[in-house]
Image 1 (cartoon, rainbow, N blue to C red):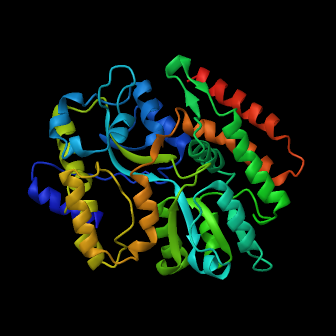
Image 2 (image 1 turned 120 degrees about the horizontal axis):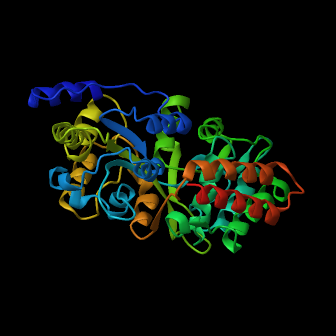
Image 3 (image 1 turned 60 degrees about the vertical axis):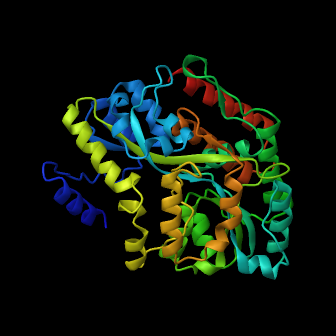
Length: 401
């Protein structure tokens, strides 16, 4: 579909040529950092939200503030997403968000029914209770799993801290400091350690990364994991798990769902780009990512090609805006998934605080992996000591950014 869109775009804009550059694996932070340092990015280059401020600080992206009026539906894009690509000091724009996700819980409906669970968990205490019921179904059943490898352990820890009302980092620039070594951070570790070694409902295999919970759930014996809607797509396409059996709930809180981690990606422009290249790049991003009925929002075509329609992602536009209403109407009319399975998740997001990932996120998450792995593998782990060590490592990263 992407190549078809390029052909259609070039037909509409014969003076613009879109030349793709396969940067796979594009999600290798070390490789990306090296490319930015060398100034070898493409004219328009992909970035995770976690990369944006690093690229701006490195001075390798073009300031596109004067082109804002050319960005389709820019005023409708969620302000929190716009902020990801703004210079923290000047407020000028350096990139365009095109996709986003919010962490939630993915759960197995069949196991919930077998365990007598009638509603998804709204609190972390509920998660503990539900995980016990699922693991009690018999040998091999796992109530809940969490991650601790490939930077995903620190990433999940951040989401869990946010969900309890905490913060990962306070301040900006040279004044930024780690802020998770408190009762919220400790509560996250205490719950996981309790579930792993006292409740014994997290299984014995640890060191899990992004796709591992999906593989475990495909066996029909995992009840709950933290994840975003894209994991549901992978669960189905890679492991043939029926969509009917998968549901999502908002990320729980201490007393109710109140906050979750927001992530995503967008595009930035090489600082060496000419004005004509920047304008051409914006035109293509408008076509492919920001216009209802086109590109990623062409739900009619997506459904016709047998691809899933109805997942609550991306969620780019402010609720009630014209762009949001048009995209929602188009998606609803072409939906081929059991959208009711995601209703609890989507309805809650409107009132939840969506927390952007911390600065130097990938480097901090890598240190968080060590803490999470120790919590999930060492029955005698000193949780406060692990938290202290992680905070010291995070502060060192922030001081050297």
